[in-house]
Length: 431
Image (tube, rainbow, N blue to C red; front, side, top):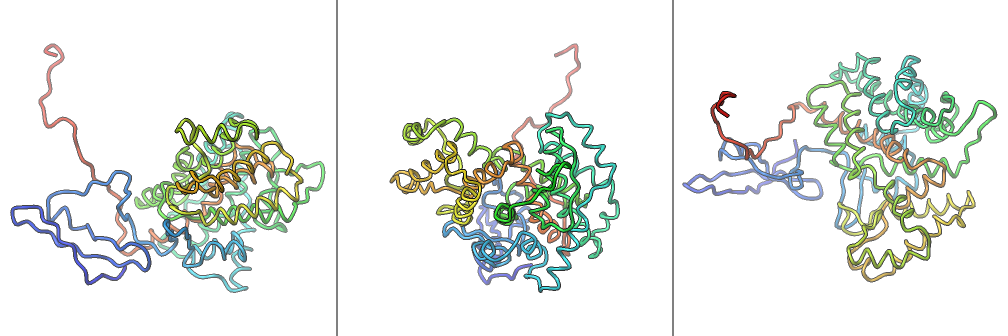
């Protein structure tokens, strides 16, 4: 548990009933009031819909300074990691708290590479889905089904079992995600290749065919790996909280991750980059940008991919993604694509228009990642599944941190009940 502050907070409930609460000190960011004794001392619960002012856990993994526009993985600025690191090195950092040595990095990457295959019977699970099923419904179902193949993962008190569980899920999520795409398009499944990197392997499984050798462009692979790294974790968001909530019951870790996938599917959470492409499609052409922007100012339209609920300034990931976006468009020669030209004009307007500057509606990471994914050839329906692939690392780090807490308790939120008080049953002939 974090160290206690010397400061205490007193809450006066009247009738000489005063509750004294300890303040717990954060390393950086906001300190919190320890409310665990509130019910016992006052006979009341706190009320905080959406937990917007409630710290539901203690964590050492990720920190966001929304006002300053900073994101840290284990204390490392995301800008430094995006410039120098990779998704798998970031995964090691999130899971273990420190950057790996050369030997640790090699061992971790080798372990992931050697666990990318799926049990042959899992392929039968795919055949149970309709061809037009949404990829997220398939990812949710398949990740949950994988629990049946690894019953030993229930022994999460064992450090060795926790380690192999995290390796398996990180390794198999690209395979599961790529197979969702192949299945919905009637394409033959492509097995992973151990000689390829994490990002290269995913792109190979997505786009290769048995007919000829598929060569992954290194710039595209690096861009995709960067997308994964930037989306790996983001503090206590809805899907991460869902993983912690499910995991607190002691459920199978694959089931807890499936809960995170299901939560991420919600359009208010994981569908942001998909919404960007939909908005660009609605604008239609560069000629319509000015009128659409005017409609945004008049609250007629909603601007997707600009601003952020957490970041009150700029999204630190957006600058990185913007540079990556232009690199991808250069290598693919797609600067003349009408949709990309439209997106770039909208970006230019947003970065120069006083209305957007005043309201701090800067392009966020989803604006650029959606453009990159489309340029690579990943269909819009797959965007949230790719997000789930990236976020699996963070979910596992958060699950591992929670499940190893000495005083772990099953989550049990309270409620403000406003329904009927007690009343007597009325026989049907008297109603």
